[in-house]
Image (cartoon, rainbow, N blue to C red; front, side, top):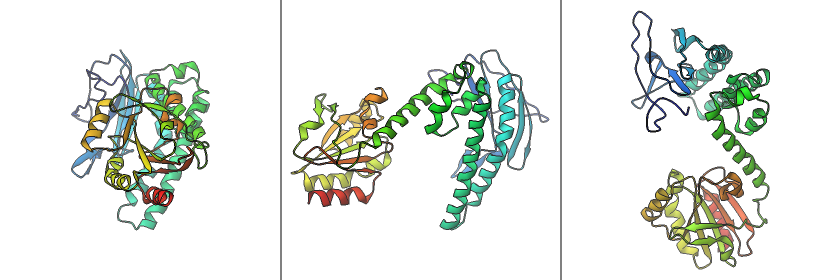
Length: 345
């Protein structure tokens, strides 16, 4: 969580503790709200040469300045059974963890069982896993309802579906809203607000609806307005330099652009990027079409990707010469190219 020990905005630090005769102590300065994750080494698994923990092999605890905690536990097969004391928050967290533990154990068992199974068997196991996790999320929501003034309810808010966050946040008392978890809640609420606006926008971004107009900066720092392309077919390509599937689709996009550019213009709208990375990607991949930058620090209500109900990348929108939407296509699949060919041929 924000505030994890470390300098220069380093949010994650790692350390190793050696236990002697089943006991250990760890002393480190805590100047701000900090989350510690305790993972017994013998419960870590290897995947392609890298260590990682599972949902049943760690324990989280939370400390603010001047606080300390005591962890007592044992290792049972692949499960770290432990309890916390020392602060009211950690004691409450420990009790709530015991309520959730059966879900984690069952979920991990189902995940492990998928190895080596047929596709049909894996899908059946995944459906059971999904149901277990749905019950776990319901347990988190029930905790919020039953303990709206407990700071831990704020932490539980980070564990529920994004489409429920705003509703359950309204149920929290100030003690939970303004607890040490507030640094986690602020970006979460922004994300939930953006999600809600995207859901509302989906009803407007459909075939036959007017494409929302916008003005964004081009790579040479000039203003570009979508309506300036009225009379041509337009593809809005919502992408980012960080998006592997976006980059993978560039060669095919270039081929279709070369084929139809007498009737078609493509507008690449870079999202969730820094200006420097965007410009570097435009140059590296030699993108021949109009390229504009969608600033990532604007309010969600002013975000073009939100207005076009973009929830994944890449997303492409085909617009007709009359300015009406022909179709919207998420992901890098053949459906977009088939629709483009059928529309312009």
